[in-house]
Length: 208
Ligand SMILES: NC(=O)c1ccc[n+]([C@@H]2O[C@H](COP(=O)([O-])OP(=O)(O)OC[C@H]3O[C@@H](n4cnc5c(N)ncnc54)[C@H](OP(=O)(O)O)[C@@H]3O)[C@@H](O)[C@H]2O)c1
Image (tube, rainbow, N blue to C red; front, side, top):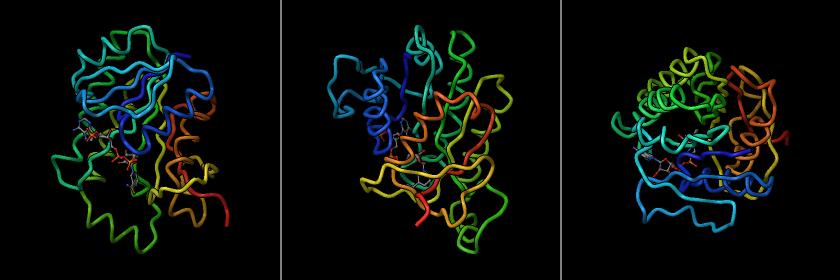
């Protein structure tokens, strides 16, 4: 498996790299500037520096790879920062159409599920740009003809807990949070599982 990881220097992106390398995949880590390294060195890891919203750049990276995982996401809930979801999805689809890549996995937000807790309903109002751009990202993928999977998460936590629960089209019960390690493991497991194609999954911490 030859895998491209977008957002590879981010907190979840780094864990995706580690999980992929553990499975002996060949990985190309995409970062937007040379000073933002993914922090891992490995003989099966190479780094490509460029804009993940530039389809021509992405096409040059995608060539010779089997799949891509995007952990891109705005670091602020502003319109400009969150637009990376939709803009990168557009670039991914354009780039994929000129290469052999068919399998795309992305991270997204559990705020897209129609059933929301009271807190979820409040957050949908507080961070509308996240909801709008993530929704647009998923729509672009849904209509792309690609084999896509979206991993929708609630709150991300930095813990060593690598386990997760995942459910198709819904957040698992009481699943408001998940560790970044758990989310990374879901992405790598889903990459290898054809059953997850063409759907959004809610990913959460294991049952307490
Ligand atoms: N934080 C949460 O509680 C939460 C909840 C639900 C879902 N999510 C989603 O889960 C995923 C992983 O989250 P995380 O907190 O682990 O990520 P993170 O550490 O914030 O990393 C985000 C990555 O996206 C890149 N990025 C952001 N804007 C970009 C742009 N305009 N151009 C190029 N690269 C850009 C960052 O690169 P730079 O370092 O260069 O900025 C970084 O590599 C994201 O999709 C996030 O939206 C997060």
